[in-house]
Structure formats: structure tokens, C-alpha cells
Length: 63
Image 1 (cartoon, rainbow, N blue to C red):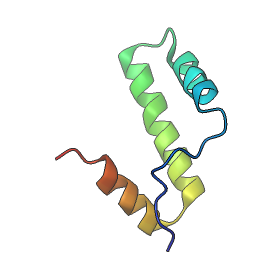
Image 2: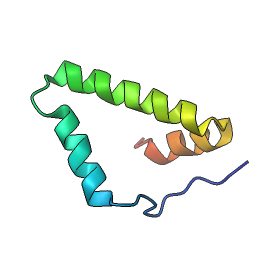
Image 3: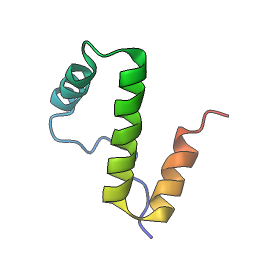
Image 4: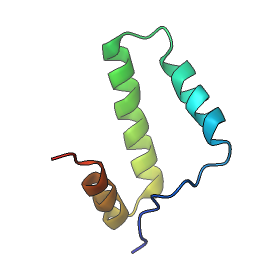
């Protein structure tokens, strides 16, 4: 099992963030929520490692 990467690891971080914001531009809250859910599932499928995904869920949990 791989460890979850929590340090910056995206080439062009600011460019990615701008792309993410542009994807949501002009969308309703409901449409943005659908985009986020689909993006999470697409990226989770790409990662594929349940252990890494579990680590990500734990890292994201604010409770």
C-alpha cells in the first residue's frame, strides 16, 4: 500500500486551481456539487488503492 501524498505535488498548482474555478464558473451550487462529486469519483477510480483512499478520507474528515 502506498502512503497518501499530502505535500504539494501538482505541476502548475495555480494553473490547476484556475482551471478548477473556471469549471465551476456560472454553475449553480447544485451543479458545482455534482461536478465535485464526479471529480472525486473519477480521481478515486484513477488512484484505485483502497488504502490510499481511506487515508484521504481520514485526512479530509473534519470531525
